[in-house]
Image (cartoon, protein in one colour):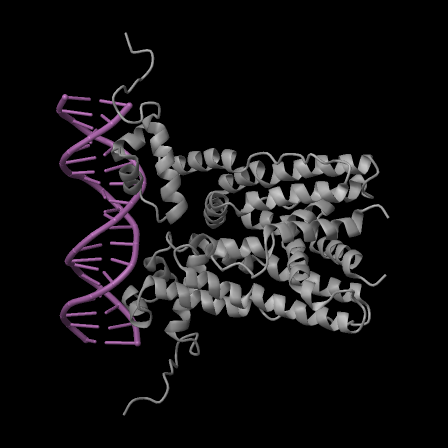
Length: 211
Length: 211
DNA sequence: GTCTATAAAGCGATAGAC
DNA sequence: GTCTATCGCTTTATAGAC
């Protein structure tokens, strides 16, 4: 007769299993050191388990890394909320843009970006998984918004030019500011996510706004 | 009496020193494997020298990496040529944009991008050096072009909004297409550097072109 | 300067007790 | 499931001969 649930009744953190502790430690270690430079010893020490315990839950270092990346991408790239104000296209674009920039510039998103970029040639599935849950979802959300605005006559934008328009829009939002942040270069003085979002919305409206 | 110049008279490649061979091998190995996963043995084997010879020329693995990055950045980021056609602002922007995109999408530039992004938290100087010889120079060139076009009345753009305008422009050119390429995701069907450059030039002209 | 040989340490992964 | 202990291999870096 096995216990129906593992209940660690006396430790300070009874609800978190060892598997969760390992994943949390892996996140810290991998995002700080990169995949190759990270060691399973470091993960084990941070998770307060032995190395053998890690291998009881994850078949290899690579498997642990991939699980961790998948878990982090799910929470780091929460779906973009559609804006509240729909009557003003410029305002709707601005709201979405600002939210998009703040997602991109979050420290955890930056760390994910760095590690995945660095390792994508050796781990192609990781790069594709990242792209699928990050950029792809953001693009879908933006497509929904822009289609809606166009259908209501608030944007002069037909379906055929939608993919290009969205690439240009997201590109403006993930420009120099994001690159500096990823590289550790101090941000350009006077540049803020709000200014960037406003500039991108203005540029987009100048091109696709109704006259 | 020491020989005035080291002349290896009988090998197939007399002009290239061992130091150059080591740097070339380091480039291949580091850009393929990333910094941490690359080994000095692999560099030595590819350069056809012993590991001890490497350490006679470079004090450590890290020093070799930094030298290699500096050397590659200098050649990978050749200065953007200013466009020939100056009378048509849209055409000038397009030419510069297309050149910029092709620089970004070159396989070697992509590999540099990946490795430097992945390692920038541990090697901040590398990230800053990359930014200084890559994006900074491109921004300077674009500033020169845009200032010139504005001075001649071909763009409605004053100095104050120049930094933002340039960030938006370069962002459009380094958007989804570049991200896909870095991550190894196949390019979006129908998207080409030319279409992207044209879209960015059109968007920019809609916002900053003279009416 | 360049080599062979090796030191010294760290790595991923596993065996076996409990 | 979890631990301790260890295997077998690779790593960066150096010593010493030439």
